[in-house]
Amino acid sequence: MRQVLVVARHELRSAARERLALALLVVFLGMALVSSSIGWASHHTVTKVYEQTVIQMGRHVPNPFTGVSPLEITRNTVVYIVLIGALLAAVVGVRSAVRDRRSGVADLILSRPVGTHAYTLGKLLGVHAWIGIVLVAAASVSWVGVWFALKAPLSASETLSLAQFFALAWLFLVPFSALGLIAGARSRHESTALLVPILVWVAVVFAIPQLGTAQHPSALLNPVPSGASTADLLFKVNQAVLGPVSIAEHFKHGGGAILHLRDVDSTAIGGDVVSLTVAAVLSVVALTLVGRSSMRRPLYE
Amino acid sequence: MTELAIRTSRLTKTYNGTPALDDLTIEVKRGEVFGLLGHNGAGKTTTVSLLTTLLDPSSGSAEVDGHDLARDAVRVRRSIGYLPENVEFYDALTLEENLAFFARLSGIAKPAARIAEVLRFLDFDRHERERLAAFSKGMRQRVGIAQAILHAPSVLFLDEPTSGLDPTGVKMLRDTIIRLNRELGMTVFMNTHLLAEVTKTCTSIGVLRAGRLIYQDSLERTLESFPGQDSLEEIYLQIETDAA
Image (tube, each protein chain N blue to C red):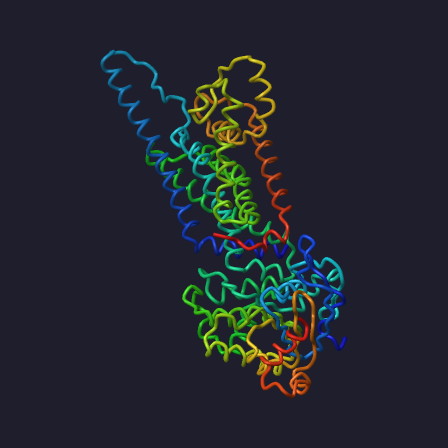
């Protein structure tokens, strides 16, 4: 365990000095800011239209935002994490593994009294600790963004929901950083190391959800699935088979429910968390299967 | 404690049926500076990779510092220092940060004092806070030596340590190897192409050809055994020709 922490600490320090890792931080903070801005603009526009309508109609009707969670402002963050966060987590993982192979440091590390598992798990812990720091910073920006947009700070329970959402995002990103590390450790070429996680990302984020939730047409565009569906047997079979592996869909649903977004069924979050946890555990197990020989293999440009 | 620092018995490594190292039986005594010579592809790096536990042998056995490679790999790793060819380290980190990582990996709980001691020994302490990005090849080799000796190993493995160095760097590295051997008592096992360096540094040599050991003796006896030859280069070529 000590060796895992040594590698993780070193990985965290290296990440903090890497341009790509710092770019990840900037992108996430920008993402949180843009999400809050879009949420604010949407809220502001609808409220203005509502106010004019009330004046023109001359009678009081409920504001569409009445009863809506203030966290609705951060709605787009759900999609940004699926689209940008997952990709960046994979790229940071690839870079971490490739860095050691390209510089020849992997040989040095493996000649020290450190086990292969300790090395790979330490790298994952370090990479994901960095992603955790990035998410905490993004959560802070979101919190402040909502405060500015609504001119009122989030309550304790809303703050807890926001924290839970980013914790779920951290869990959702584990398979992507693990996949990046696996690809970086196993690939013969640096370009292949990057290509493999991108292909998997495309499959998980786009292809599998389309196959599994095509009976929810609006789900393909929106951050959360719509309620209407067909009862076609093919779709049912598809959903039964592909549903559990559609981790992007699970995150969109679970995250949306935690943020109390409109149109999101807030039940069955447990199933989403279980699916994401299983995916994270399986990815960690897959990482431990990477052998010493592949990590030592020469890496070609 | 055994008198031998390294002992191999019929050590063999094959890749897809092709032997990279074939039946290597070799003994290196404690306190020696052993130079392993051979053409490119002769099996020198494979030998070092096996002895540093980076590769598993296909057959045969070996002991380093009295520990069996197969049964006691972790103890072997604690006993050895290793400098691969062309290692570059972490450019974004300082010298101290790079060394602290390897010190902690080697089980040194509070590495600062040991790093300072090693850097003083190598006359390199003024660069402690500098990032490696600006280091020359020669400076990087000294970083490599520093990380290899941080945990005071008994046996030091160097793979082509003078490769790519300028004459000043070569001399500095040669002096360092001699000091490590004479002042700290480390056994040094070194792969090299530079026969002039072997003459100035090594106490015994071995010659590998196509994965097989074709010669092993002390440098002194080697120089005496080939009276007609003026240099180690000529002796080496003679050994290669005889084995062909």
